[in-house]
Length: 476
Image 1 (cartoon, rainbow, N blue to C red):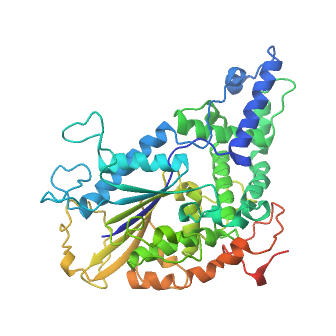
Image 2: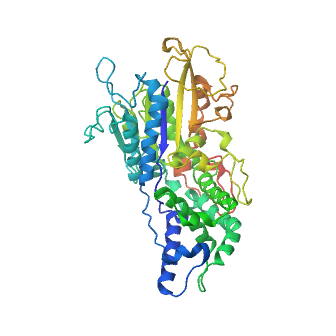
Image 3: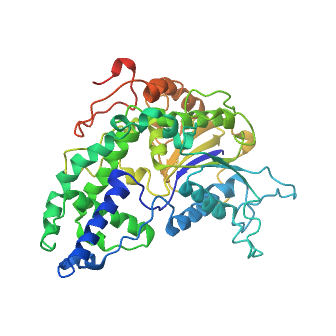
């Protein structure tokens, strides 16, 4: 089994996005300015805590809860995959850098962007997987915490090619009219679902203070971030279940129309990682780039080793969304509603299910003796590699299975039908590779990222671009 893994950062502070940290800070400042200027006036009822509220959030960084979640994710990856991949001995709780005969294993290579929260996610994940802080013989200094693996840190924040932060080199994604369609659409949905909540909350406001729907949205957002920072928030109790469903839908809107099928650059932002995935599956270097791939990294063994038992890459939530889009996994091609409240709970594109904090997309390569193995419907815990008849010397039939946060993805929904025919989420390796032969062409990478086009974004249209655009498909 070969296991490429790509994951997002775990619990973090808000970013500086207009509808994210910026709106939260504006609301907190509005409250603070009012309470300072009017000490004799006060918020009442469930809003009484605002009378002496302090905004305590930082910006963009990984929180302590996020660090612990990444540590646990590393432990979990060892338990689920590492034990099998490395044929762990009885009681082995983490990776061992040596073979049973005592010789050193080749060091795994982890990849991360240079952004603080992403690199810190990698650091804490590695502590969980490699286990330097819980060895049989305790090491209080954790002196050799990074000695068992190598790390490739790919710069983020400039215009470098970086599949883990592909928006840097896709210039059109950084233009307001193209890259932020979903952000504008969020602001058309907020009044639809929060007008009643805002009116209810205003009944507890002092004279002279008026909550807007954007303020109410900020209160929901602050609840979410305070929970991921300190594990508690007084804002969380102010809203109904339906109003929280509406909040969830705003995130679906933002990401679908910024990074997925609803944006002309959706495929382009994910195609580079898809190319890397295909290269790893075929044991090939990438010596030249026509996408966000950095071929100076992907053309050599130290930075882009082949034939590894596992790969671990640390990236952003939007990249995973774009990768799924570039794969043409049409199960998720379901645009979020801009007009229905509450939204359909059975919709497919739900961001909190796809890329929650610490979200992960894992591609499993499974070897079988039969080219048509019988599906297994019941859950099984695998205690050792050969428990269910697996024999590495007799496993010529290779299959791909993908897990998104442990849920098995429907590869049979990949456009073109190459992966149809099984009910267990597996797709023959050759069929999966066939399903991606046209992925780059569908992305129209050069035009989507660098073409001279404009699209009208009135914040209410909700157009589905199939994640791409061509010169003949310009929308004026």
